[in-house]
Structures are given as C-alpha cells and as structure tokens.
Length: 250
Image (cartoon, rainbow, N blue to C red; front, side, top):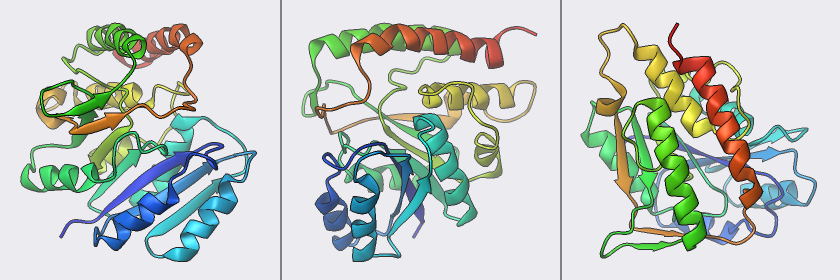
C-alpha cells in the first residue's frame, strides 16, 4: 500500500481546526499521516496541535515555524520535511477541511492506478450528484481569476486554488520545492509554473498529460477564511510576478 504525508498549514486555526475529524479519519484505518505546519500562530494553535499529536504521535506530526511566513513558505517547509521521510506521495490540504479528508484515499488510489500522473488537484465543479457549497460572489470571482490563470500558464486548468492537492514524491516534484516561492499565496500556480518551466525542451510528458483535476464529491466554504475579497487585486499582481519569473519568453 502506498504511503502519503499530507501537509496542513496552520495560522491562527485554534478555533477552526476540527481535531476530532483527523482523529476519526485515523481511527477508520486510513494509513496517511499528517504534518501540521504551525506558521507562527499568535493564538493557541500550537497547543491544539500538540494535544492532537499526543493522541497518535506516529500519525500526527508538527513542524513549528517561529514566525509567520505565509501559506506558500509554510507548505514549502512542510514539503521539504515530508519528502525527507520518504513517502510515495506528499500533499497539502486546507486546515478548515473545506475538502473532506475522505478525498485523500481517492487521490492516492488515482496516483496508484495512473503511474503517468505526477499531480492530482481537487476541482470545485458543480455537477449533478456533487455538493459544492460556495457563495456566488466567490464562485464568479474565482472563475475570472481561473481564466486569467489558465491563459497565463497556457494550460486548460479549471481550478488551481482549491486547497486539496496530492503530488508524487519523485525527484522532479521534489525539485519544485527546493527554492523559496516568489509569491506569498499563489503557491499552487507557482508550482505549476515551475513544473511547466522544468519540462521545456525535454522529453518529459507535458504538464497537461501529467496533471489530473478530480471533481470533488463535496466541498463547502468554511467561515473565517484568511483570504478576503480585497485580496483579489493582489492575486493578479502575484500572477504577473509568476509570469515574469517563469513563463515570459526568454
């Protein structure tokens, strides 16, 4: 059976972290481990994580950052530690569990059955039979940004910003995390940009053949998100930074 470590970046999540859901997932027999990265929280997040770790030290790991560095760097630091442990897959998941933990085994099974894939991204697609609870404003703002992202990357990807990702722990994927990201929040897009850049002029499969978007069965917006409406213009600025760093013609 394949092994996976899922990174959970946490910044001031003491009131939102559903510890009981992680415990229930582990008790259900799922083998995946979790690495919680405390990103310099100023509330009692670290204490909550330490209590969770005490319930199962082998399953729940903690990486504590002394100061707040932003989600991108928190995930990167977690990824470096996770890769060092030698799992088959490394992923990252939003701490609020907007995407249920039950999607993790589905992602693992997909990578197990598809050795041609390097990445599985969760996608919030409103299809019949799926429960996607998202405000209309966030949905339409998201579609505008997703379209701009697809054009920037030259990749027909539907949803880069869903906080549910699983990556194969291969040397090419590990290399994507070696250097700090140029942006603070758009790590998903920057990972894709690095992935695309690394394949230019090589015999490696192009990005569109190595990435799979999985339409989630369930996703719900959780109140208290760190991303606010006024962050929308900042995202376009960071998107421009990514284009300049990785994708512009040389």
